[in-house]
Length: 425
Length: 185
Figure 1 (tube, one colour):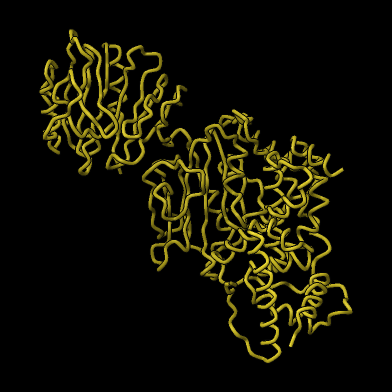
Figure 2 (cartoon, chains in turn green, brown):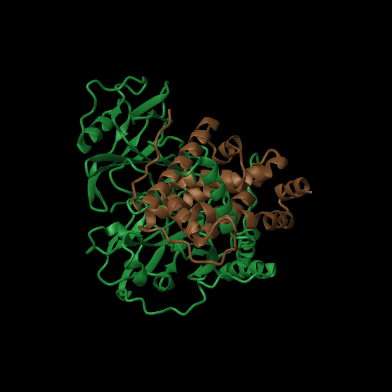
């Protein structure tokens, strides 16, 4: 029988003998390299310090700054990116993939299957295989496709600086140490142990994952870091071609580019926002963009209309409610008392059919005018306001796009935005 | 001196943090090695804990609590890495053979037997034993490091010792019985 005191003495002696006296020399230096380019998290700071994010032409400068910072510490970098790229035994990278949302072109192993993301990536965490906001390219012949795949995603950096964003992405447990890297000249970090790379350019952050499950150890020989680097070497970043999720109203001018709505409209809805527009709705069920500085808040809203008011001077809704079809809604809106509606005409957006018409509110109304209701609120319009309405059946979801205008000048700005709307895939 | 360094590091002084880190890294690495029983994982855990410490240092309220705080970060990193390791790999890498100092109280066979016993404990049990028998923490201090109630720490320590004793006795008998962490009343 082993007594407790005997066991405790043995254990104490065992630990004293076995514990390493010293950490490897490189460990502290490597850690301080990361610290040298990491910011502290401070509470009660209204706006974090931002590193200027260079335009595309300046990316090499930031990469150089990172490397110089590391070099100035006087420590040697790890060696895992220094070795020659060996033949991996993986299929040749002959497939070609263009991300529909994230502004990335890249090659992938022959015979693999692509599963593009269908919604914008807005979360802070690293995406995983099943997330709809992750472009996934995998070996479709495997019983467990999530055991071997390439994943990629991108999102605007927002208020976060480039170094914080990229280092946060590779700071998964077990992913240290990390090393500076560049993907298509964009600077960032790569973790050899997790095969994650995170880089940024033009205010946008990108993550790439070369996932190999530990449950299939044989895979790690072929799909190793050298293979992952070969894949990364094919990447071409196109931040201007990426899609951003339309934010809630914030007052700041939207960066011109492609925006998408969140879930709830049957399929992803994207559109082009030119210079001079702002997000102008805080209702998730009614995202909207408006012309900045326009006194009448002319702009475009997206919503799923559930009913129409019984009488524009009141807030009572139709009972029974308006029917479920596109035609039901178009008829009900066209019949609003005192409003003028043009005859509806057929319209198709990305293959989804619907109706388009214009609705003009009476200019001599003596009451606040109400029109239709979504699940969040009843819409009101101003006297004489014109709404360019497109009601589309998106795979069973009745999406209404309303362009509110108050002048022909407004029309010239609203119509191109509405014409840029795409639905799906 | 340490308090002054912590204050400076909290204010963003990287040189001060470098001094703090250089004073802590060896001990942290040793603890991580004993908990994780793997050289590379211990390096990862140590580095991760130090980077977390730098990032979160402004939020440390009491500079005098730096040692206990960074130990908590290390234990957390070890737990995270242990979990990730179980998810990503089917086998834990065994400790490579490294020269150890001669210890008159334990011979090679004794160490091997203890090593086999320790490997059969859960990560949580091993962590508890390291904190108590290597770091020298009382159950109350270990509870703080593990962010668990004191009663839980005491029962975990008790069960870990019992589990290790059972593993060693089974080893002496030449039998290997499965060990599961139990629940104490």
